[in-house]
Length: 196
Image (cartoon, rainbow, N blue to C red):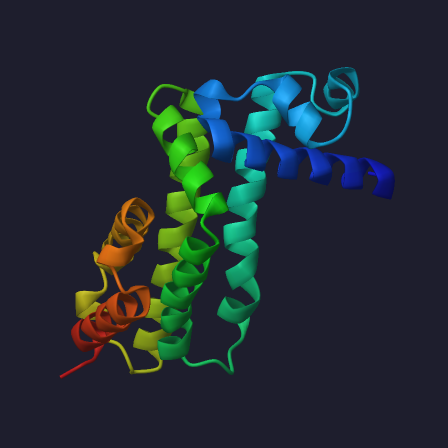
């Protein structure tokens, strides 16, 4: 892909994110995305022929952002499993504070209850998230710092803790001290995973 095409697609995806943020998926229109991207709707169609293609590309972009931010750290053997586990919480705090991607992700999540393709993409994201958490727990068990007997439900539990905080904070930021919440969640998880 040429740099020009990549730049144009990036501009369109950013414009789609802003448009959905302002109008939700159900209220967003391609003409609004084109206006936000400072281009004609015809030019937008050159890069994304349909609304579905644009929105599914945006969802892929959001999901890829979540994965890329943790890949390097998770592969670094010099980083302790405890620190890697803490990173999941710290990453969620950062994502929640940025809010845009998380708000739009939850809009896609709602759409996924009706759209099988969106559901499949989100299921894949959750599966990858749980697999990454499980790999950290497995690494910790191999190093003797985590108990393997408590690990089976931990990936789904951690994802639930993080999604729950996201939903609560996005609805009422005053109701939740993110740092204190995730510090307590991390301490709880470490207490469960640490061998007696």
